[in-house]
Image (cartoon, rainbow, N blue to C red; front, top):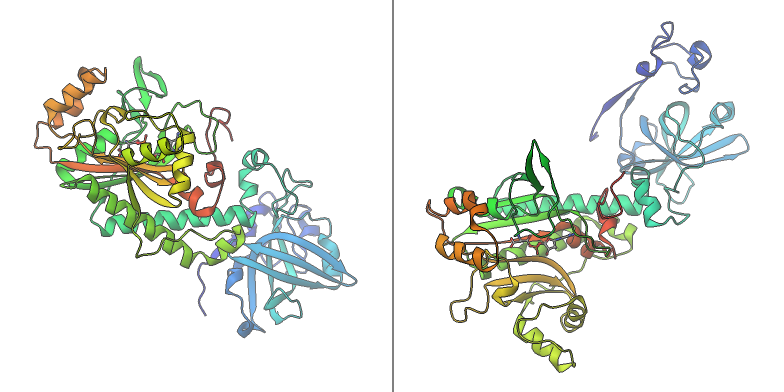
Length: 474
Ligand code: AMO
């Protein structure tokens, strides 16, 4: 029999202060007088957890097991009591016969217990087996009422849930979102590693702007001005001179006073940078990656999708992500009467119109150079256009990237054109004198991608402790 994990629930620790309580003492609640922990008819005070709940099956009838988990529900029917017990893997029913149950009748739902008992067949519809026990240890009590209903029977506002996030994680819908995020991170890492990208970690405390100066959080760093990194842009570009292909998955910071369902002041970014690749090549990398995330989640997270009531969007393998140019988008907008011309940035309202014409994932390519950051390279056949793209999911921008300038003189000139001071980028510019290869890359907002694949209408749903202009704690 496979036992995924074992850990010792050393009850003795709880008994510190009671020198006369020893392992093996019967009924030690009375013995040591502590009311936060006791055994029902126990002969030992050390329970060693033997199984995850998901490991129980009918073939185990008659086996003795020790489970640990949270009381989701408790019912007393005559001389028999039923506990619905949940751990992170699943849910089961615990049956306690006779007086034993009376001794913990005051215990609130969501308290955490250890149960030692025997697996037996059950007549309950929702379970394959149940556990008959007289041996229960209380490991931690839950207050009543709790600030939110972790079962989700009573709806709580997103603010209230975020204020009590750890408890919200016992809600199966919330837990499913974060299990899917965990899977997505694994797929992102393994796919990029397979494509020969090397994982790096760049500094988050920096001395000059990485994205040109706007929306920077600044603070005093031992008498010098310092900032929180908005992206790993300059560092990841520099790393191509030694490592060729790099990626980073880290949190970055934007001092954006935005109150939308897609902007946070701290967000998780997946970034790549690759030498000897053009923007077409890194779009291919991104497309493969997003497809891999979607297909893996769809097949490996069936229970989670059921729990959140949403199927991960799938794109047919025969239909590559559409690549729509900026100029095409402008003409689509003009056709529906929008007052927009070449060189104008596309507003949220524009992107919503374009998103209707191109539902699902698509690339929006070849933006006017003047709308792009200083490090983006122009197109050879039209220097007003850039070798750049955004990955959209309908109206929502998931990623942006492009081919970079790799000639230091052109980069210096571009900084000056954008009214940025090249002197502040000297460390960065210096590395361009050391054999900088042509390179391209992108940054993708993981929180936005997770919102798309889980059907969340607000990125806060997919971020543990979101930070926005109104939310700095917990
Ligand atoms: P950009 O600024 O477009 O590009 O950011 C890349 C992606 O990061 C996500 N993102 C955000 N997500 C949540 N809240 C925010 N405030 C926020 N800001 C950005 C978006 C966006 O598409 N250095 C370039 C990338 C590159 O060229 O490599 C950059 O940061 O999903």
